[in-house]
Length: 183
Image 1 (spheres, helix red, strand yellow):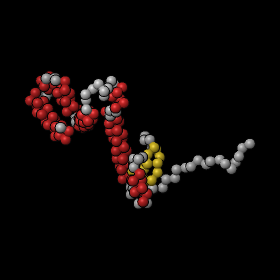
Image 2 (cartoon, one colour):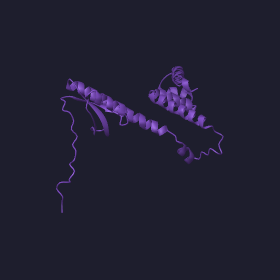
Image 3 (cartoon, one colour):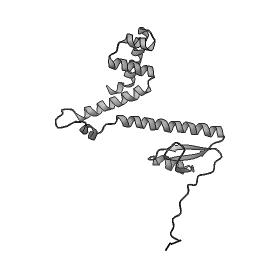
Image 4 (spheres, one colour):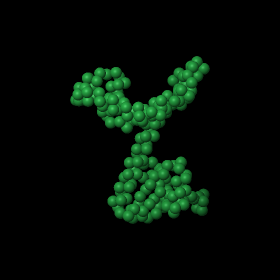
């Protein structure tokens, strides 16, 4: 026997009808922003836009289609950049469990955990700074790390050795300035 009265109805997502909607992404854990938008009377909903997973969005009304398209494109680019940064950061995160799996034994080692964490912080900051460099800058850093000759790399890149030396000095000085807090 089937019961007709106890069926659950599927809830439909009801979004406000704006002629030119602008979707402002909100981090899933950011309850303060969600409360702020709702307190200002801005509708907030959790749904998936094309090419994105389910996220919270504040939905604003744009004045023109061009404005809405430009802002939505900018927000999409921002979300993709954050996803790439989070993935890159996750690649370089190290936990005690992963160190133990790789053979680290705190009882046998005389390494100080504070030193290990500080070294990891320096390496993470260095990876972030290297990611901001141009391809030429990263090539010069690889040259320094691999102890290649400036002449060979200058020839490979099609520049003079003195130009290569100047680029190397400028890039290394810039990295030293930006990483100065980790000395």
